[in-house]
Length: 141
Image (cartoon, rainbow, N blue to C red; front, top):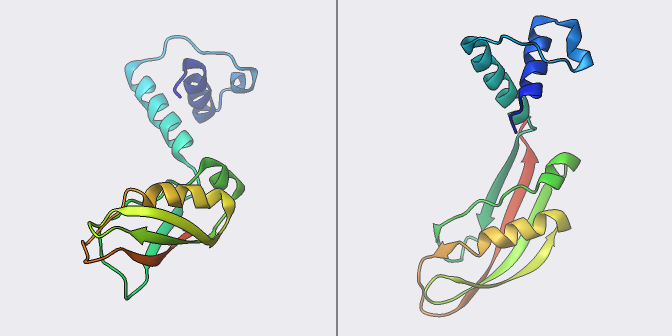
């Protein structure tokens, strides 16, 4: 969230201003300085650890037509939780996910995977099938 005080602190820190620590807001900020403030604040707020998610399905199962990546939970990101989540998925003949069952994984990561898999679409088949899907959350650094 952009606030003038945060922007002023970022700009003061960039200039080495001693008032940065006192929380004072400098007046008379020009157009280019405002742009620098906004860019610096955006970079600071966006500088969170990078995590990757990958998913694999069993080789003898149906192919995925539409795959939705799970949203990495903020609390898991803050706690640095990484690992695998395995879900058993029941797929209807028309390719929609009917239900999921947790096979294993960290409880904080499981719900994000279940929410993502509900939006997956598979190639239609002749009957209802079950397959295991594995998600992996790992640190990219």
